[in-house]
Length: 334
Length: 252
Image 1 (cartoon, chains in turn green, cyan):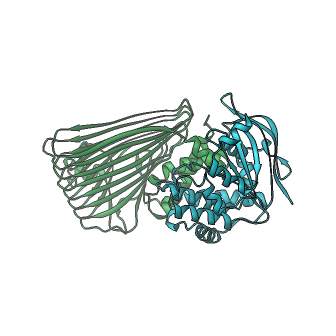
Image 2 (cartoon, chains in turn cyan, purple):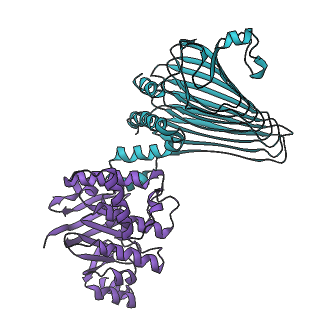
Image 3 (tube, helix red, strand yellow):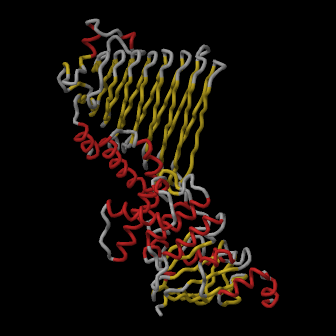
């Protein structure tokens, strides 16, 4: 919880969802982004559930409406905490450009439905920081229109259980999605991440990189699927799963998969599961670093390129939280 | 003259196989020693044992460094006390930046020496200055440790780290291997620049060529885990010309 509040301070929460209910007032924020009751928006017809794949007509929660042509003025921060479920729908209007930062904490259950309209650019940054014994489950569905771009960075460094699933459909030509992520399964923790990307039309681009670390008897799983439809020619799609195991009982299962029905595509997938490099640890100790420092530096080196995708001060604070997690995981090596 | 290292009857083995079979070796401040010998004679093992590589087991003998029992110290304690090993095969460490790595290493060394810690500005200035010792491109020091470095750059990087840490005892394990003529000159010149009356260098090499630049006070020949002959720099010239056979035949 200490870690969560640390992140809270920094995020300067704008939308706070607690126990499944939005605790922030609805309305138009100074930046121009509208935060509305999702249920009311659906009932009044202001939102068509069809615009968000998989959104139910009786959904309750929060709608974040980014107007067409909007230009990012800082980030919008959304915290999802406490027990209980809630849906968050995000509409990024035509040609808009925005950044959303999510912090998940506690036993949060959340469905996130994203529609990135024509030519829009949406950056989603999310940190999962549940405490030991807590369980977070998040299911994200996104559809991306032509020439639109969604860039997602996921950092999971909670001490509990996390079950994260993402399904992104590229529905308009020249659309693009990039998803970089990291999960860290310490002793007694279970983390699973599923990422599905569907290329439904030609000329789209996707790139998924997921990194996992497991220590003690921690368990992590990555389930990746790249689907390329029959007509989605000139698809460029990449999927990588990189994993680090610390200690004999830690486990990571990874399954990066491709399902390709088009015949003129550029696709790749790969997975590695490795251990700490003992030669590197010895090398660093020979320069005066303690064994823990050498291992910590190596582990930080493995995770930092994901964390550094957060912008500015955010990267520094997430890095500090990750360092604490790394220290805790170190205790279970050997 | 201040004694830095005294090795007496050192025996060491790996996986039950004895590699060092009784080495006696003394290094005083200001001296340069060269250790030569055929492949498999135990040169790199000797360097690793002095550095404290945990893969090797010391089965006999004693090693005193600046008056204290070196064998009772672990790898990092030796490093902080000023024992530096230039690796024959420097390790690539992806994701770990040279700056972060060296910052910690320098901090630990200064802690040991009781010196105040450097500010970020002072540290970066030191990185720039020491990089010049071996003409190491400042771009390389901004990258991950040895990642994507050429063979020559890796060896330059070893000497750069030596310059940063200012050790009292430097052991250069085949630092000349894989270097072209220019890189060899730069690396050797760098080592010479770092020589002071208070530190000492042990150069392990196969070739006289390196010793043209780093002129040794003593040359030792290691064979089957023992020093079978010691001499001055003329011994290296003789070995270069005549090989090891004459010496090994005498030894038998």
